[in-house]
Length: 205
Image (cartoon, rainbow, N blue to C red; front, side):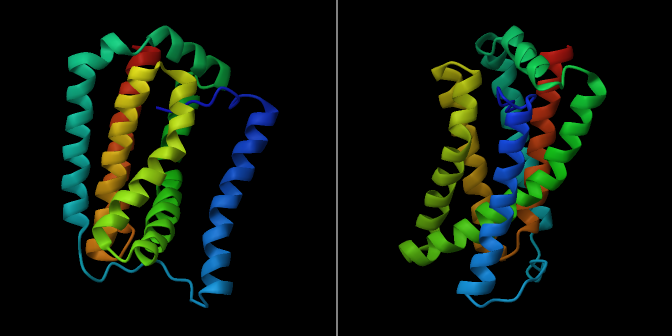
């Protein structure tokens, strides 16, 4: 679970909101003005929701297993609690509000940006679906590394980044296979719920 150190400050909130606006606007502006495309809801024409659910459950099971086997020893729960306090989510209802937002709207936003836009641009760049899967997953991971490094030591950062890469690759593959963000979104939601369950345990358990 990523809790930016500045998330609870006015500056941190302003940066976060500005970043989200930028992430929403750039793909839309590029698609409409440069690619001359038309907006759509990424219709689910080729199925894939069942595969998305299965991938989400599989990745979540791996996350829980990793946490139970060695995550509890590697992650400093006091450090996570301090980060939660700084961010203002050390109160259960605030934590749950954040969890609902990140597991729904933010997950949809990330699928829209990283799969619908970034993955497709990688596909054009490298001329290969599978290389685009790996490249977009690497870019997606880089997006998370700084936030991870700000909260955890290098070992936890590497392990968590590996998990982010696997998730990013799975969701990019979903887009490659089904040409819709919704299979990846369903999987993304399930994985985020698993992460927040662990986050709850670390902060309130």
